[in-house]
Amino acid sequence: EVQLVESGGGLVKPGGSLRLSCAASGFTFSSYSMNWVRQAPGKGLEWVSSISSSSSYIYYADSVKGRFTISRDNAKNSLYLQMNSLRAEDTAVYYCARALYSGSYTFDYWGQGTLVTVSS
Amino acid sequence: DIQMTQSPSSLSASVGDRVTITCQASQDISNYLNWYQQKPGKAPKLLIYDASNLETGVPSRFSGSGSGTDFTFTISSLQPEDIATYYCQQYDNLPTFGGGTKVEIK
Image (cartoon, rainbow over all chains, first blue to last red; front, side):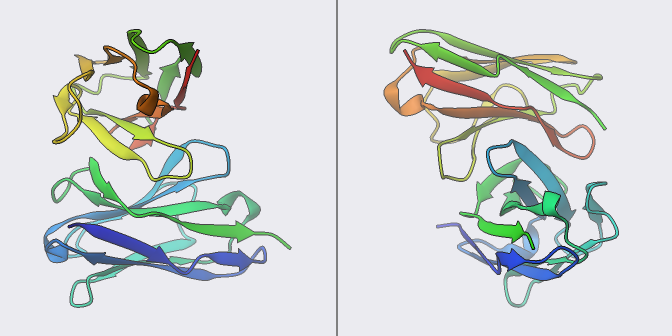
């Protein structure tokens, strides 16, 4: 069974940093592109970042470019999101999501999400 | 960025009704369009990919159609468990989502 479990969310002050993790199991993690998608409270979905299976291709939404860094460790079946210079508008539930196949942006499995709150 | 305009933003229908949601892209996206269902407090779930392909395990009352800029998502006979918010998502370029349609029972 495919499982994605996010962790690392919490309350952080504006300008602060946080590192999210996503532990994957039930599939060959190293064969799939992975993504972060977020959802502000009461709002819609926003794609944040993607990383290819071998980390060769990395993309970011303009809203986080230069502040967030996506990475992965295939040996540990883990995906990460380093978030720096956090702003109030980054407050959201952050989901990790598996792509249907490498290079795809069809998200076939999602984690349960981790809440990030940016507030003083 | 490709903008996705989804309508309506909310609807109320009776059990057994046919429900239709539309999604319009700001430019031609071929069939690079997915539909997701999100129930309150839960992660989104993929229902339809490539505009019209039903994800494995998804009931056949859900369907999708369209290409280019105009897409339609249909629930042929609304069931109580279909209460959720539905999102379209394009992936012709970096992915963007529609604003969502909240479906309620009348």
